[in-house]
Length: 111
Length: 115
Image (cartoon, rainbow over the protein chains, first blue to last red):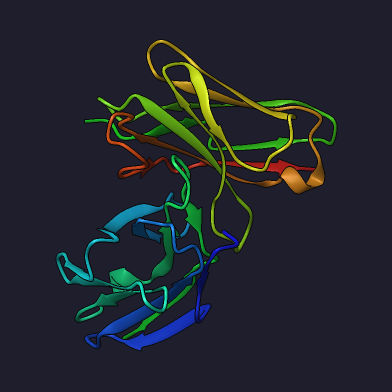
């Protein structure tokens, strides 16, 4: 995960508010990016992905934005819920078959 | 539809011992990747198996080896265990014909503690 990093290791958000998790990457050759959610004691769970030919992709309550100019990726979670509390990882496909993960951002939702 | 299953879920070994971890991919998947996740860190790629061959390897020593069987299940072997090998070992499956990585489905992991 040397090439993928997250701006903040922790994020505390009020239930119902929107969350924004940021990620910077350094390999301009990466063309595929994924956000994963990892709850305590579980394996990472796929949230959403985006390819480098796109700037934005939306899922259910989540949006991923990709800014290739500044090599920045973000995950927006709308109306954050207690079940969204977890560690969030961005990952980049900088090599043929390998994903490189950042260190993660721990999101805590306050009731 | 069974997801990725790993065994054992937890195990404790001592330095110098050897360990074998097992993984069954999600139904319909033919590619298995192994990742090591140290406490508080993101997963680190160990290697990937496709068509019973190691297709790509990360920056891990030869003490880490693997195998993929004809039914696509896989094993991760670690020899001469070190304290630093203590980690959560994650198996992820995918479809090998989707070009690069595609979407990975992770198992719950095997928690290895080396004393």
